[in-house]
Image (cartoon, rainbow, N blue to C red; front, side, top):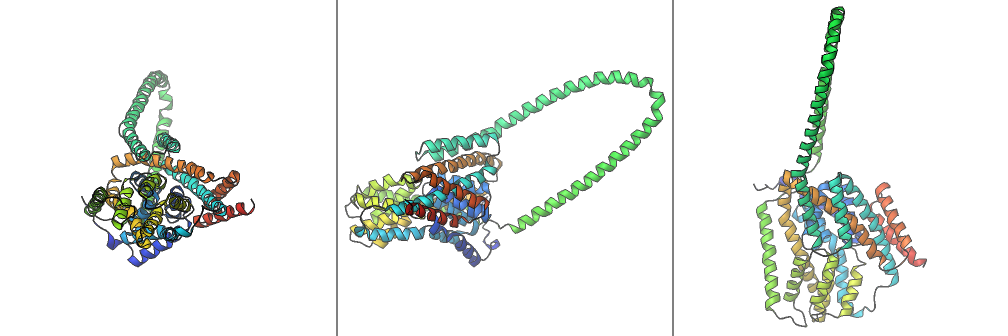
Length: 498
């Protein structure tokens, strides 16, 4: 059965747009540290502070993003706004999230001929301070998510295994495989193994109870013989005591029933009030979702045909750029780090730019806020300027082309996720998927730390920044963007005191 749209039940569009701008505007300037840090900041803002969705829903969306091609953190940011307020607000959220960094990368790409050398040391230390603060936020998000997603032995084991494996191995196919495996394990456990264990426990308890009853019968027979001897002496007082006891029991039971009814009525009232206060999520039909899926595959087929039929030339054309970057965005799992060698192969090896130009852009994107896929805007600008064409147009086309596949697929998935997530079997699957996704967040803390320390500096000082960020955001209620800015300030202090 298709899900009917509920647009009339949502607040006015202007109110939703204002909420989106107020929530996402700061992200375009403070999301340093890469995808792992982005997840922590989104969780802090959307789940902890604004309470748009629950921990479980956030983790399910995160798990789906990890299993789809494209930039996971950007898809998650888009999805959160889509579920909250609809397509227009989701597009605005995406632009606020990514455009500031994309503009900087475009300008640098156009002016690349005048930029010499690599990133200076002060910029490296500043970026390390920003990333160290982001590590604290990621660790805080992982801790908070664990309180609701890893509540029994099975989910804790799955989170531990997924976190350990993803910290040791970085193959792009690994993340979807881990989450699918976790979902299958939790389904098998909840649907078959757990009921079997319950039956075994109940059988043991029944046998133990039967043995106890038999022993009580033997003892009762002996007691009965003794009571018969003194029966005549205590009949009157015994009957009176029994009657009094029965009356007291009836009164207590009636009183307890009344209190229980009152408690249930109170809970129902509270739940009703809570449902009235909560805003319904944005929904749309599964038919529209299938249209988005068809568009994704049509564009993918078109990009494959263009790449196969149009010869690659040293001077890139707009068509070749769009086809190449859409194709890359459609096949890349694992986000920014995985996309680098593939982009280098398609741009540098095709002679659209020099190796030095590519490396300067790669160094710069590590120090910029926003998604790593903004690197596409830089590459498009450089390729078009080198070809004697419009660099701004090249940057815009590559920017759209590389983000489009993931957003189209996310639009296609959301209605089915909303429909099936409440099914008992799907809940069993998502229990394991969420646990594995939690493990990925924990491992992201470590991977982000390794990435930060790769450029040297004072390791102990960076650990202090991460710890201070954890405490400031988690226990002192300091907003996440301000924590990131303070981390950058501490990184600048490290450079000043070198």
